[in-house]
Structure formats: C-alpha cells, structure tokens
Length: 148
Image (cartoon, rainbow, N blue to C red; front, side):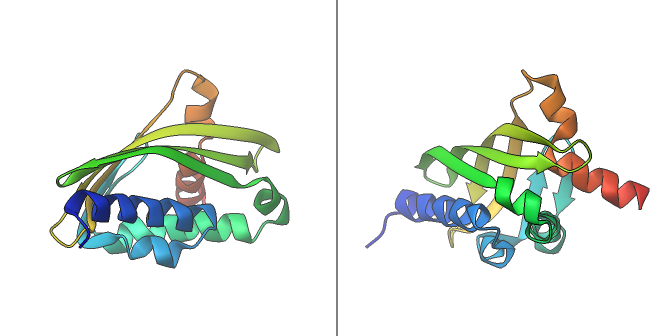
C-alpha cells in the first residue's frame, strides 16, 4: 500500500514529467477542481483557469519549432510530508520576443487533498537575475493575453 507521502510525491513527479513533455492534459489530472494557483504573475482559482494557463503555455511551445527545440524542463528536490510537498524546477526555453534562451529557476510548494490531488500550487521564481522575472514564460502568456 502506498503511503500518503509517497502518493503525493508521485503526483508531483507525474506533474513535472508531463510538463517536461508539454502534456497539459496529464498535468490537469494532478489538480483538484478547487485548486488555487499563485506565482508572481498569476493568481488563479479553479482547475479550469489553472489548466488553461498550462495548455496555452504548452501549445505555444509545441507550435513553434524553435521554441520546441529549446524547451527543457528539469525538476528535483521533491519532498512530501502528510498533505504538503515541494519541488525545485527549471524551465529552459526560447523567449520569442528577443530570440534569447532563458532559464527560470522556480521553487514550488503544494498542498494536497485526501485523494492526492493538488489543491494549492505556489511557485516562486529565483529573481537573482532580474531579467528572468520579466522574461519569464508566464509573463509572456500575460503579455499576449493583455496585448492581443
């Protein structure tokens, strides 16, 4: 029988393995309907809004051959205890506005429900490189939504 902490670690691993292959639908299976997502750019409520953010990001990368070639996601330091968890992940991608390669270093914390689904997901960026904060992949999404 899988313990609660093992189950929650499996959820984190499934989420980031799916993200590394840009599989937003698999990522969606990790979230509860009432998930709350927050980072420096977004505060999203509910599975639909949260998953739509990931769908847009994944689709934008998949549809651009140069961006897809540059895409790489790694994650480590997955830790869980009872209904909480954390991970560190790094996204390597092409910033389309400048054509420059960017690396975002992100620490994530999670809270899980009794089914092992994510109900709270908070990402915090490594802002030691100020440019990364403003060139971040979620910032791109935000700019596209506001400008277009």
